[in-house]
Length: 93
Image (cartoon, rainbow, N blue to C red; front, side):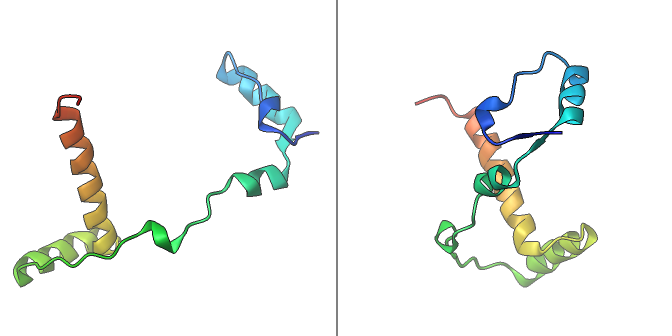
């Protein structure tokens, strides 16, 4: 098995079959994988305070539990989806 130690050694594949054959004979160097992972930084997140009606918050928590999610994560996901939707509808500036 050949080990790839540089991303530039990775070819462009014409088909999935070609890619499968390539990966059957090659692997990525663990250092390459480790160096490509993004380390989270606590500075990448800002805390905000939102006030919700208690009934609304209960509904949000119930929905999140039904999806096996933390309600805060679900709200962030909803906001991210809405931002994308809004940006699609906004004319370019």
